[in-house]
Length: 333
Image (cartoon, rainbow, N blue to C red; front, side):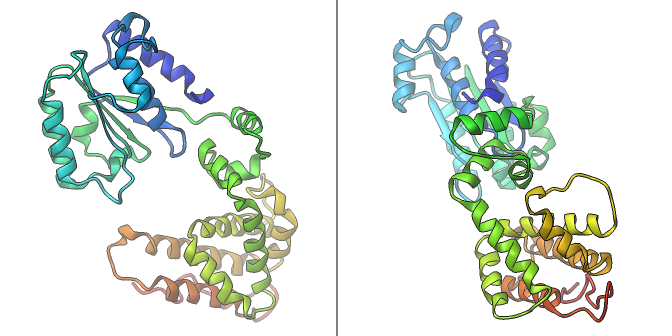
């Protein structure tokens, strides 16, 4: 179990042993905490045939759970784009059946915010009429997207964000060298930071930021390559966002810690472009990221929109600390 989840697991374990865990639990917290792992461990405790020492690790239920084929454990992983009504109805039917091992049933819905409206309404019916000893565990990093009626029928368990010190120590134990900048890039998420470092994304970030900064002073063929990279990996727009925020902060002379302290020279170089150009470019990026979201609900040529924004950034300034870029240029509506 991850160290930042240990306290929550012990508290939930105590609730199970005391019979104080309700029929529905919502584990909520930022993405990349391991809520699914916690839900799985909780199901092991609930299904163990020796409640007073659960999980014992030796009973038939614990052995089946460890093998991944416990007949009374059902899970929707949330790996699909959305969780539809058929999946929720199927889960409801299974929960309505008798437990195979006679010690309750557990259903886990991971990333529950992915439920469609119809699926959420179907789940609401299950929550209103819980079946026998069935326990429903939902996980969500965007619990505000769940129906209020679903949230109100669940015990809500907020998993706090771990301290940077704890995350950095854990990453070091995993053989990964990290720092506060890398945590900032991943919003403090321990698992996202681990994956970011493991796939070598930090080296790629340095290259993308250098390419973006170079465009402001010498537009050229690098623009199309950068555009392709940003289209393939939209998370890189977040990197640019943080870089522009740091550069603007320096341009304005604000005394505050930089978000990307490891590229401070780059931020200072961009800061010399002046706050007008930086602010308008940052505003354009905020709007770009907004309209590139699938939830925007309108057709969009992502490549065209991104290309327009990069072209404006690469357009030479008309003079020191003066710029012709406007946040609304290139965006309709």
